[in-house]
Image (cartoon, rainbow, N blue to C red; front, side):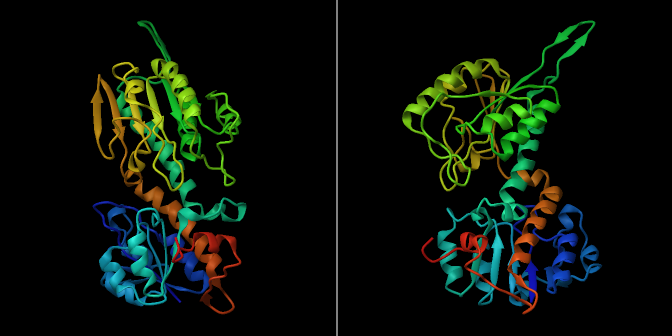
Length: 365
């Protein structure tokens, strides 16, 4: 069985889905690996490093596509790639099911099995495959680094002969994986950190990292069985806005990370709330590509409103492509290992396996 991977569209995506280390692990399973020429040179990994572990280098992406029994991707295949995919191939990646239904229909016509790793169940056995967590962790870290760069002021408290510089205040909206890493990073850099989340269960996690948890008193359960946040009622949103009014006046940097799986990001900061912040403040919206948690957020753009910078994040992992690729490739290898039957030396799709059944794209999805 041959596992293949091709370059992504480098104008949008710098990550790769196979590294020399993960290729070596796939080969040790009993499969072959092939990639196209110059596959990862843009992030400093030369073809020779792949060849040294037994990877075959093909002249073009088409050569890889027509050779592969299993194709690993970061993003959904392009129309041209779909044309060149051979029948009964397995395709695995972060394929964004909510946006690519039309492409899935074309792929499924070729009797191809598609696995989208965003759909993995949140069970302990799937943790090593959890691409959302591995990439969100990096996003949370990088969001603080980027915010501080844009803030252009000192973050920790400094006592000098010329006077005391007060510590910057950072508010994190959403205490999922990205939010928790943002809290930890901001705290390590000396900021005074607070956070809010619709899930009361996140209070203990926030406080364990040294953050202050801001909460809305509620009776409704806003956490899904899978541990994700779900959409709040209008009454809750009103109370949340009241909480934000006081918090925004005090904070210098706001990092937005709140997402609802399969839906547009919840709009938490209205135009009126944004304008409550001090001139020179920063709103860094990690949810911008899904619609944004903040008014004025636009993916890939920085807007200045009343002296407040609103930064809409786009393709943040392109700023950490080597580290992001390393983690993503490890996640993918764990998924491939779960598919591979060593005795038969085949990739098998066992629909009794919760991991496989949940992540497989079906005709009715």
